[in-house]
Image (cartoon, rainbow, N blue to C red; front, side, top):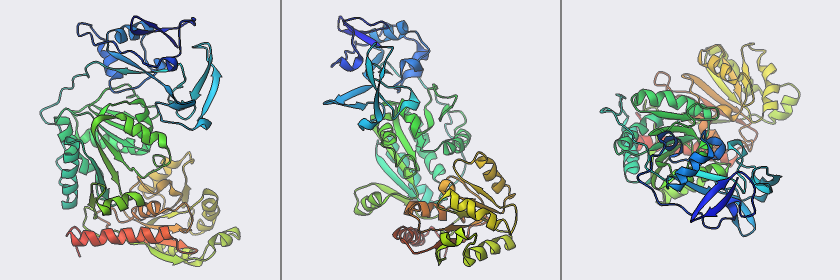
Length: 496
């Protein structure tokens, strides 16, 4: 796409001409004043409000986009900017030159830089504008009763719930540090209700699609008369305007100054922690004056230090709603288990642990650091029973195996860290084989331990870390769990 400057406006043109430019070459992109007499397209309004989209994302002809811009209702922003001679992507924030490439662009007739980092959301190049909405936002009609949920919160949940509502209404940043199984979703309901009642647009964002799929029906049940957009790769709600949005953090790349409050769930989870583009997307999707609520059971060491030093506003929920303490991991040395595995053997204490669960009819998750090691262990453990299964991220039967575990068709499930969070089985014990491996960070080990004892009917469970030498991550994970239990007792949230 190329543009011409005419009478204080830019005009998009399809064909190359000497007086046309890439949008990157226009230093100051003029923005016409809003013409209140113009009859704008309400469908285009709903599609673009709070968004930054490409021409390819819009099912409207160029002429219609142009006339909305001419009347002040649409904005054009550069998709790629330059810091000196170095390009950076406005949409995803990428500044690493390794992620930029050139191609002969048919749209502008020149060689164009483009960003490979966010290519899956549509190509951003030097001639690509990001299109947004400048006019009034769509009206949202609220029902008399916003929330239908009638449940009750524990004392710990109630305190956190009030803090969340306060932060949303007053545009604050707040961290909710809640143990695994504390009931974080229910803690959000009061704040969501208060935000919606104040005509705020809210978003719950999470790094993983399966969490979006799990949260959507729960939020729709709690707020049955509120329109909710559920956004993930392949979602049919991609162009829906809604007062409440549930989205993967990847989908936030399409938003710009959209939300009055973003609730960022599992802020410590991959890929959010590993990809700066996702962190950039979350910041860009917020309005300049807005709230940001962070939810996690395992804040990183920097955030923990900021909490304890008073630099970060936070609330802890140190106990589960059923008032039982978190299972504290037991450390068991198992020798050089990888060497034994090469000889088709597993350590005797690991075999004993598995055998006890099978004999007692107690389901269990057994975590391994790497897929080949887990698959090597599977036939050894299947000597006890052929029903034992293994699962990992690339397993095409992953969902089916998890469901079979829930329906108790599988007595023991071997897994990588893919099941460290986001799944709940009512009555299981948990083991980690090779807890000393670098992949088992403090956060991973806390999350793994949090799979056990979650149900009010089965609030106790056993967590065992089999290791070939204790690591600092193992020790910190256990200290964090012990500390939360201690705080829960001190605040009267755990029965002793």
